Image (cartoon, rainbow, N blue to C red; front, side):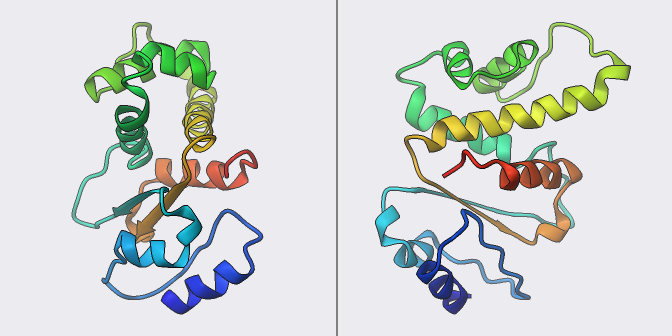
Length: 168
């Protein structure tokens, strides 16, 4: 794994690197940081998926979003102000604000079932907008282990994240 990281560093042409390996050993932040010394101040966010653990929807993206908000923005912006800065879909503002405040998503209005697919697409776009906003001032390294046990909401969000060219 370390050799693959080293090889990738020499020819970085993408913001994403996927490594498939069959080991239960996770790399520490310092191991990864050794290969990216120019990002010594970056946020390294690691998550392991397990076959035996129930996952929340959009895990770990929303949990990391809340963690990063609390670490970097809570002293500057209220949750509502932060969400406004990220320019998310107005009908989702209450959802994300409540999550930043309580760790739970609360919605004031009912969701229309015929709009479910559209709402899901916009929700994923909102997660990407939040990460894009954060990545403008903080380099992020997201490391995922055992992705074969991840949820479909995670995979849809990861796919959208990879396609988004604004992330650095």
